[in-house]
Length: 149
Image 1 (tube, helix red, strand yellow):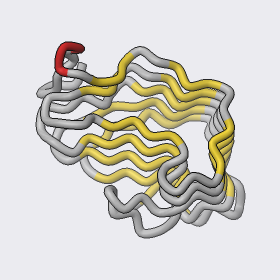
Image 2 (cartoon, helix red, strand yellow; image 1 turned 120 degrees about the vertical axis):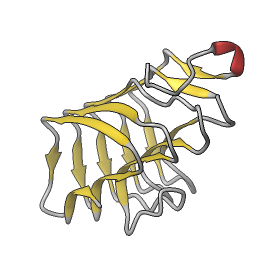
Image 3 (cartoon, one colour; image 1 turned 90 degrees about the vertical axis):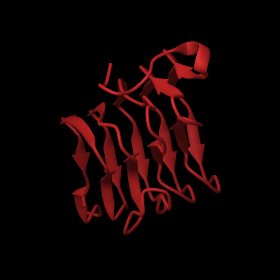
Image 4 (tube, helix red, strand yellow; image 1 turned 30 degrees about the vertical axis):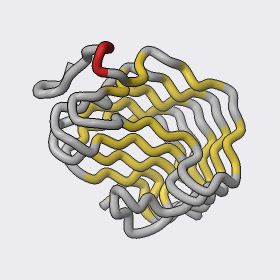
């Protein structure tokens, strides 16, 4: 668990879920999003695997913590195909991004491995105190920056 964050299911949240094998294309917002809704809420220990995420109006996969005490740690993002998504306005990304990580105050952790990115300005956008573990991701030449800012 991340120091200063909660993992109390009675406070609401999304935890221990797997999103696998979906096509998330051309949505107005994020392709896949995991967010904590209120102070001390949580969305933790979830896996996003083997999805196709493309052409969405905001970041392809967005993970956000907006208030103190929230826990959005323990995510595993693995084996996804991510392409041609938009900006994430909450994280204030400078351009279109495949994965957007945003934390307002508490340090969060996430593992991002084995994903394929193309047609994004930023493959992975990190805003705030996030500690990602990155490995074996593939960034096509059409991705201007692998990780930003």
